Each structure stands twice: as structure tokens, then as C-alpha cells.
Image (cartoon, rainbow, N blue to C red):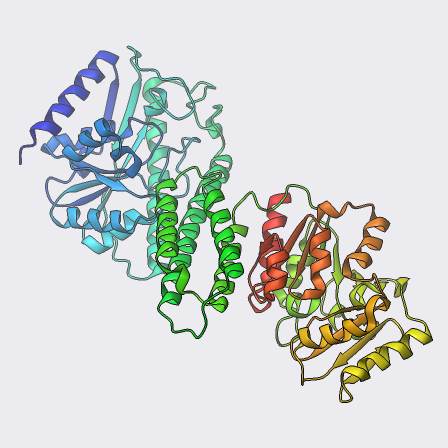
Length: 580
């Protein structure tokens, strides 16, 4: 079928090639399909590869429909040309729609060109390839026809000056034997992808050997692979650089999905029946969290900006349409979800952290009282010292430390004691005198005759009475003890923890920081309960668990997953990667 526009472009390209004096050597003509669909899998070394790779297929007057990055189609001039030539836009963040379009074109008998390496290989070797070519072949029932080129990088490639004049550059092209993938499982797709890469690598070796034989020895220049004495980056260096690109694309996909989930939460919660409308305070807090996220969400994006912007617009529209229908409980859940998404942004973790402080119950301990293997491994691999800061007294911490593959310093009894688990030495202790003990007991009895009172020596008093909530019990006791004690809580169900006045986790950790010479601003602290709030206020970076009470969440700078979802490990792994 005639295509005047594509034919005209080919004519212009040939004129350009002639003007440049390019010298093409093409082999493998017998492997060029005369008809029917085929996946044309091309190695990628230069920006003009798509022009050169189509040359062999003009033997049978065939056109190749290339899969090109979607951004190019948005350019009014380039996009018009690409559309007129029926090329296929590829969304490098979400490629499934592109794959579907390619399969349809293949089934209709088209040649579809794809660069399996996804981007230019700056090593000019065959770097790791994606599975798209194999999946397209398997789903369309058409063969993969690999095309290998060498020399195109001398004309125009990434990071080097263009050589578009009359250069007489030799470019060798070889069409390899085609084959069809029948892969149906993930394992089979992976195996066929490996097979394709090996075939392309062998083909490249053959093409380079032919290049040397015809054009002479390869010089030590930028366009020559390192293993042949050139100055191009090594394959390993190229792979590492590409891995960072793929990680960023994965981050954008996750971020887009997270933003859509926030929008869905707002829309879902507005349809639920509720008894009482939310308070203005909780509405303001939730709105502040959303605004903070949406203002900062695009920072550092190298691609995918349009997807993130669109998801942000969805959130704002959902909020405008439904915020007044949300309950306090829904707003608290939304605040947590929003802060968790914000916390994943790359800039939120500081560049300097010298110590990690971890609460125990509800933080490193799961609901079953165990430390997961992932959390234990993350903490022992952390690039900075890890300290435990807990409400537990000395006689209740051994069962926790025994689950860790290291012996940490421990801030115990809500800051009243610092214990070195490695040497079994108490480094600091703040305790009540006998008169204070009697006074506190009398205050508790004034609140409830049924309350259970348990003293850990004279360091901490634990009170429990399930007739109260923990917040209510603490408030009642605090009113009576006044400034003679500190009252807080770290568990729901009617509990109060009483320590020496002025003592809390932050004062206990301060002794550790002084001992280690660490500034509070360089500390990252995890917690989930009101007894973590003073510590959150002291340190530079505070992280609330996904199961944290609203008061702790509001004070924290960041939020992570729940204790049962290895929330500490999730954040520490990110920190380790960033600081390493």
C-alpha cells in the first residue's frame, strides 16, 4: 500500500545520507521478511538508528512503524510527522497501552520497530533489554527479526557532538534470523528475553568483527566499546546508570498510584454514612497535609510530570467536592495516607543522619511481640548507630534485645534510665524518693480504688484501669500529681505511665546524644504513641508509624507503614541506600 508521506521522508533521508557520504554495509538480506507482521528488534546506539534500521526492509518496499517515546509525539512538528508515518507512542512510565497498539499493528501485517534496550546504550554494547519484543511476538504470533548496527553512534549519539557533515562514516547493518516466541508464563518470557539478548550480543560481535575487517582497527575513541580499547563507558557503568533511570520511572508509577489512591479515599469516604461532621480543626489539618504534598510532589521529577499533575488535579477536585462530607475518623486516616505518600518523596530524608532512635512496642515489635527478620536486618545494616527508646523498664527489655542481631543502647522507662545492653551497665537513672512514691500511690487511689499499681523499682510506675481510656486516666492522675511527676501513656486500654518530673524520652535520649557527641537535628526517631511526642519535637526527623495515634502523627515530620508492615525497615532501608 502506497504511503506518499512516509515515501517522501525516506527520499529525504536518502538525500541526507548521500550528502553526508555515509557508507552502508548491509548483510543478512535473506532474513528480511517479504510480508506479514514482524517485530524488528534494533540495538540502540544513536539518535538516527530508526532511519538506518529501516534500510534493509526497503528491499521489499516495506515500512517500519517504530515505537517512539510519547514525549516526542507532543511536539507539534515532530508529533505530526510521527503520526503521519503511523509510528506508535510509548509511555515509558505505563507501557501496556503501547504494547496493545503494537500487537494490533503486528496482527494486521505491519513491521513494528522496537529498541529492546529502551534507551541508547552509551557503552555501545547490548545492555539489559526489556521483555516488550518477546511479549509482542508471543501475543501477535509474529516473529522477532533482530537488526544489529554499528557505526551509527559516530553520527549522532547521546552526550557527544553531532557529526552531520560530509563525514563518509561507515555504518554496518546486519539482519539476523527471525524466530517466534511462544512464551505464556513470566518465566518463559524471561527465558526468551535472555535468548534475544544473547542473539543480539552474538550478532553485535559479528558486526564489529566485520567492521574491523573492512574499515580497519578500532581507534581508542568515544564511539568504540571499552572492551575493544575505546573510551566509551563500560557495560557495567551503563547498566548502573540505566538502573537509576528505571528506579525513577518506578517511583513515578508508584507516586501516581499513591496519589490516585488518595483521591479514591476521599471519594469513597464521602459516600459513607456518618453520625457527626468533622471538626474545623481536623479539616484544616487534613487540608494542610494535602497542600504540603501537592506543592512538593513534583520536585525532582525528570519525567512523568503530566501524570503527577493530573493525579494532583483529581485530588483537589475530590477535596472540593467532598471534604465537607468527611468525618473526623476519615480525615485522620486521610492525613496518615497523605503524610505516608509525602514521606516517599526523595528529598524528605535528610542527607545527614548520625543516629536512629526506635520505639519498641507498636514500632519495631509486631502485634505478636516479635521483631521481623526484615526489620532486624535493616537495623543491623543501618549506616549509623541504632538506639531503643521505650516506655519499658529494665526487666522488660531483654526479650526485645534478644531478638536483635546487635546490642543497642536503650533509653528505658520513658527516659528515666539509660542502659547499655552490650555491657549490662546502667549509664543514667532518675528515680523517685520514698515520699514521692507514697504521694503518687495516694493520687492514683484518689482517681480509682480499682486501679492496679506496678512499680519498676522507683524509676517508673505503671497504672492500669480499664474503666478509663488511657488519655482519660492520664489526665485524671496528672491533675492530682501536678509538677511532682510526668504522666504519659504508650498503650490503649486504660494505662498511665508515671516518671520523675521533667523526665521523658527526649531527656533520656539527650544523655545518649551527649555521650556520643551527636546533635539532635541529626537524629531520626520512630514512634507511635504520646510518650514519643517530646522526642519527636527534639529530633531533626521524626517518623510516625502507620498505626500511630493522631497526636503522634501530627507531631511527626514523616510517616511510614505500620509495625506489622515493617514500617521501620521500609524507612531505614531507604536511609541506608541514600547514605551509602
